[in-house]
Image 1 (cartoon, rainbow, N blue to C red):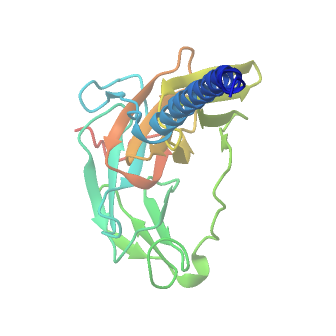
Image 2: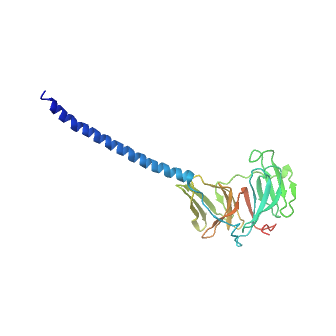
Image 3: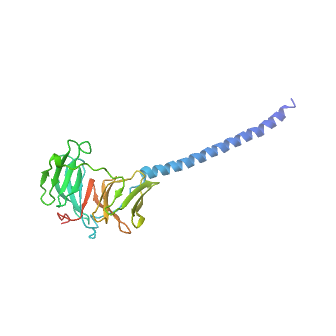
Length: 253
């Protein structure tokens, strides 16, 4: 019976050590959960909830230094209507509408626009092509044997003077850089969700600016001068925005 107190005295420190180890483990687990939650929350914010960038609008603040005309289409998809707008910023003008989705747009040397919808791509139906007169709105069908072959979508935004523009979106920031004979410089660096991207690039013939469409269907005009500026040309436009070196219809009025 005299051994019982000794056993009780030995068990008490062991129980305390066990509780101490459990407390350390729980604290460690809590720290891991907090750190993991922080990084998960930051990643979720950057990829989903971080606001998309805002840019000035050329519609409200025109820039007369920008020369050229941009042809584009407007939502809803497949309405078949083609519009033009001065690159300097102005009220858009509807040129004409064709049956179904107008497809790819190309400026012709005489100032008219060729719209070509390819079978198997965006839109439905067989391959068709039209010539749109910007001044009169007249629409002319292109014979099937004269329809140009489809062009591949460029992976790099390549300019008319050998410029190469690349974009990178990660860690909650979108960066656009341009490389040319003078080196590489940043055109744009803004906070944006990791899922925010640009597409459908098209250049002005003089290489002084180009158009990209962002995920909000905004047509953004990006200048290549140093410093570069990015502004909204059209809020609600899509494939493709095509630039011309002249303004055949004076869409700005």
